[in-house]
Image 1 (cartoon, one colour):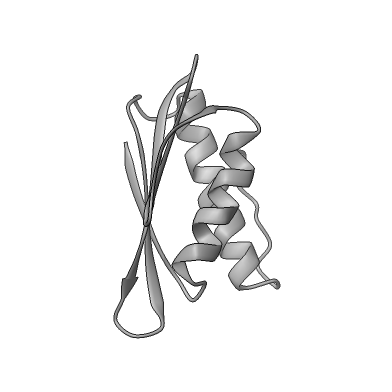
Image 2 (cartoon, helix red, strand yellow):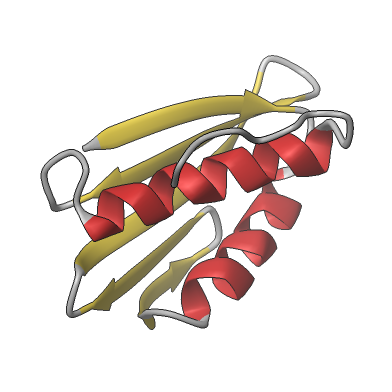
Length: 96
């Protein structure tokens, strides 16, 4: 599955957050300037953060699993946390 989110957070902040969030649950597999990859028994998750259109950052989270898997739920939860960090008034209501 592949998910996209556009945020005002800088790419480095998004990737630092990805390392903190996924690193506690999955093993780091790859670290590049704009991409991180993690893997574990639930599957593989990659996160990329690219500057886009001035002050925006395009965040892409991709898993090697089908929708509603544990890896998929983690990916969606991470994007929810990115949204909440950029907009503290956002109230996450998803079940993931």
